Image (cartoon, rainbow, N blue to C red; front, side):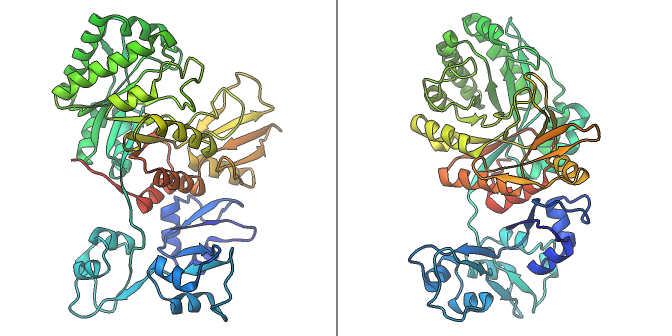
Length: 471
């Protein structure tokens, strides 16, 4: 995939023509509600295996051709290079993917084997729905990338009947689904949630249901509730017994523990709960994961951080979700919600105390709109990435991109004359996050939260990775 940023005067027709892709395909992969209304600064995914390569010092056309499995002649022709010896650092070269014209008697399996790619990737890249309807003379694009296999979790808090279309649409991209969340009670029981529809739909989409428990609500931090439970062994035993009962009744296959705002004095009791949970649930054939606040050191102060022991969770749990989002908190000042520079600080620390094979990168998929000037405690509006683009178009705002946080944003004035600042995600920020997951060698990605339409994310996720399916 390529990512193009809309410039003044651009039209979707012109972009499609320049990259030799169809307008319907551009509309589909980008989820464009109005193809005639592009926004300056908007990122557009170009569905192609072709890439651009920026020359680095010491590179030759022969070396670049080797990297991409193509020929020097193809690069020269595609870039109209007059002097092959005169390439220089910083030069951007267009590298077309390999093509293959099907010969009489050839099968798609044979072609995939010849180029050492999977048949499924060959079908996906060429948008082949029925392999029996591909004929000699058809030109196939050969997949370029090796796509690492990763786990993908999605939290969902829109439950009941509302969950069905969401899980149905996003399920193909998920390994796990976590309906959020069972609230623990002081006696070790759990407050029920309407998760039956989400679980059933998940299973139909070959997604593993993962039970989620928590100690907080939108109005209560839950620190005292957690203290009561964590410091009483009998309540802990009762809690675990109730969890196992619900998991068996509902069809859950694993547990995610998301205790937040735990008192610093309860750090060790929390670790003990986690160890006891793993011992009990593993014996029943279940896995256990946790969700951790985004820490940058073991000495980080604050109610959100001190009781979250990265080393212990990384050692005890089967995997951990790093909640690397919410810097741009809904009641705080406007800023990037998931700034990549801050996320990398969290990852750098995490990798010193826990194995990368257990780390899931937390990825938020919503936008926020703050009123300006910001007043402390004033709540920002939260909505989808699609709505962020629509709002930019409505108010004729140019989208900007912050290179440090790797996040798009814009400002606009509403009909009442009030200024707003919007931070969201786009194709560029998603790709930057996926590149980070790959460069750090992480085990997976965890989305918070499903139900906010963001088609570009799913397009790029599938382009970068092969999502593991366990059922």
